[in-house]
Length: 129
Image (cartoon, helix red, strand yellow):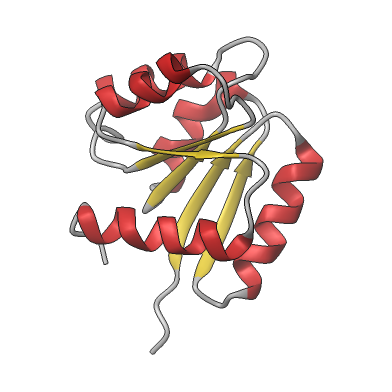
C-alpha cells in the first residue's frame, strides 16, 4: 500500500501553488491541498489535518509569521510541522523567526527535488515518517 503524505500549501500566488501541487503530486508521495488566502489558513489546516504545511511569508491580510503564530497557538494544529517557503532572501531575521518555532526555511525559487528532500527531513525529524 502506498501511503501519501498530506501537504497544505499556504501561499497567495495561485500560479506558484498550482505548479508546486502538480510537481509534488507527480512524485506519487503527496496529496496536496492549496490555500491561497492567508486569512483562511488556520481553518484550512484544522479541516484538512495535513502532515506538513508549506507556508509563504509575504501575503496580504495576514503574513506568514502571523499564520505560523496562529497555527502554533491552536491545539489541533500545534504539532503540524511547517516549512517557511519564501522569496525573502536578505532578511536573516525572518529565518531566525521561523527557527523560533523550530521550523524549516526554504528560499524560492526551489526545485521539486529540494522541496521533496526537505519535506522528508522535516517529517523524519518530527517523527512523522
